Each structure stands twice: as structure tokens, then as C-alpha cells.
Length: 181
Image (cartoon, rainbow, N blue to C red; front, side, top):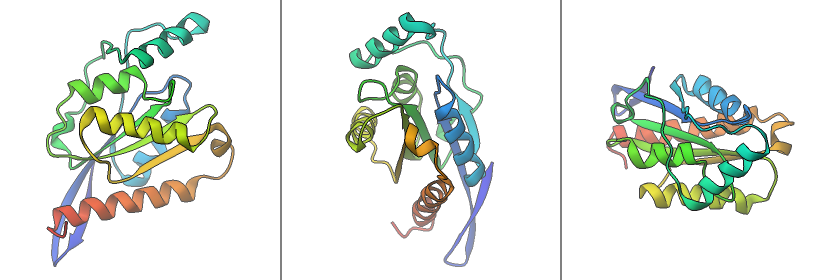
């Protein structure tokens, strides 16, 4: 989808893609809400790794810790054709999930600006920041905004946090498109 950006008397289209991986559904829920707020296209990353049960859980943590890449199913959208790519991941051992790492390292993002969001079962702000830092380090791209949700956050009304995140993204991309930044 595209969204109208206005500035300096012009109208431009801002093309946004929300990409996420979700094992339990929490990151999917956030991704869907962010995409709806931004009127964006959405892409769920899918891999062929068994992640259910205790063995799948341990496998996932080991992949994240080692920086392993996994095979992803083909994407429906071409990330390099977007102005903004918003990437979401669950936090696995202080870092991003292996499907998201694979996406960030193997898919061409072109000139798109990026933003990160994450969900985590437990932990402090340092878990979120560590995850965002690993995403930034892997891509060499500085996000225009970040947003993290713990399980505790997901039990509250977080609509304002998503609205604020979306406004920050719209503003940042609009400024770039209109030559302000």
C-alpha cells in the first residue's frame, strides 16, 4: 500500500512494508497492528525449521546465539521497492530471531529507511536495546524509530505506543522524501 506524504506543496507516495517473524503470535499481532496503522503492506517471514516443543525452543536459541541463517520461504513483496521497511522480531537470547537475521542479511532493502520492533517474554529494557543494536549492527542501517513490547506491555492498552511509533515513522520518511533531512 502507499500513503500520501505532503510537504513543500507536493504530494508524494510513501510505500511501507512491515516484515516480521513470529513464533507465538505476539510479534504477528504487533506487526498487523503497525501495518494497519501505517496502511502498509505486510510480510510474514516463514522458515522450514521445527520450532515446537522443548527441542525446537533450544534449537531456536542456539541459532540466535550463533548467528545462524535459515532457509526462508519466498517473499510476496520486494523490500527494495519500498520507502520504509519496518522489521519485527521476537527477542531470542538478547538478539533477533534467526529468520529475521536471514532476512536482514540476504534481502536487498535498496534505499529504504528502516525501523525495528520486537516482542519479548520477559526481561528489561536492556534486552530490547540489545536486540535493536544487533539488528543495526547486522545491517549497518540506523533505524528511524524502535518499539519494544514485553509480555507485560501486551496485556495493557498499547494503542498509543503504536500510534506514536507510526507518527515518528511517517514524519521521518516524509522529511526524507521532501528533502528536509
